[in-house]
Length: 258
Image (cartoon, rainbow, N blue to C red; front, side, top):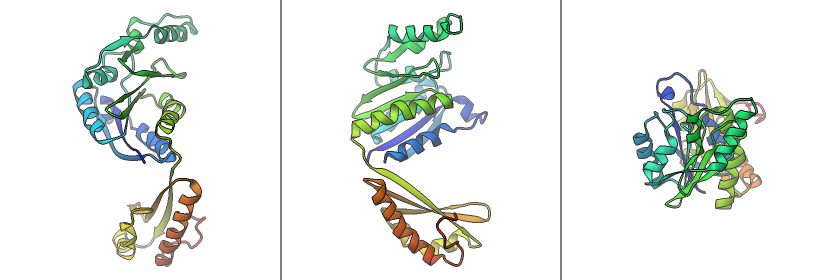
């Protein structure tokens, strides 16, 4: 299965002014098609630092997804950072500009000149349609790594990742696999005690087992990778039965009551 890294861009994220919800949405979308997300990162609106982070990710991952920094203002540097990272020119696309103009004309206004920068793409890149906003996404392949840049506005990003990015990734890698997860809620027992009881299961390669402590409970997470949902569900079923058997004093025996 291919690996991916996610980079969210925006100084407002680093300042804590808004919460990053895009990483979770992207990770969930990739999980559904069997892509492993190995790293995520957050960085401010600095083209040099974005370019550096992108170069590092390309060395490790099959897919790098960026979100944020594609707007029309000075502090929207993502397209410039991509061009800088790989020594590419930014090329003006009249068809993209025409689409931006048409979108503004629907409201009886002309676009400000700074919106023109949204019609520029790094050389060799394709645009990703954005019916929910003015900023098209960017898609290109560099050093055998797929790179996708999407707007940071959540509603625009969510539409683009599901309608444009996921289908492209699925087709490129010929993906048919899935990643499925089940959570078992355990109460009245500490995380360390649970670990002692199922530590051997936490060493499994597939499915994997992980623990996440909450307030007054612990979730035992089981993650299975397989070529289809039927096989993944079977892997989960067998392991869930074993975990529930070992933790029967602290968890509901009915799998439907999580």
